Image 1 (tube, rainbow, N blue to C red):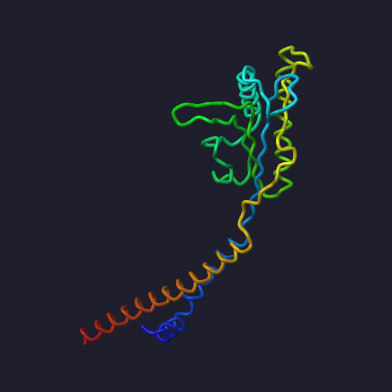
Image 2: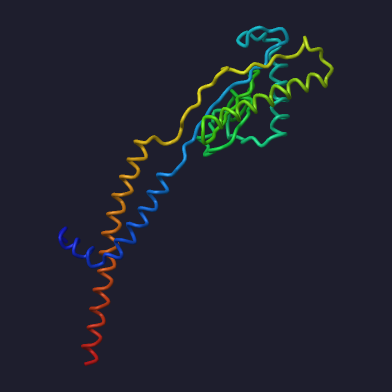
Length: 225
């Protein structure tokens, strides 16, 4: 079949082609309106009382700090609705979460044995705007600091012996993990090409069915005559 023949078929079955193109245009509109996703992460490091640096943690004190970090994580998680990630290395956007937050005690072990080697909590946030993720991150960090304070105050610890809580980095970068204008343009171009191909195939299919039906009807008439 030549291109000219196919064009004639499409013109005869224009309503089929129009219906297919309308469906593709609708899909392109939906694709073009897809919102962007932003992601940010930060770490909450627990420092021994009087410790001046988050990078120098006494090995003898580290297990206690890690245990305390785990208690804080469970308290904050129980009071909110964080996303539970499949592993410490997973990301929110990689797990399909476009709006939410997670707070985890990083596990540096493997599938056979867990290992919590650092007294810190990892926080991730996804949302539809930089302002949104920054605000959520600030809220979660505030909850962690408040929970750490309350737990130690309720235990009767003196303020000068409190475990320190530091956020790192102080001003985390917000990452745009959504599609780029170039990527959306390529997607629309592909959709348009698919729409043209589908329109031609659909028109040809309807034409073939119609011709076959007319031939059978004509044959039945001749047999009756």
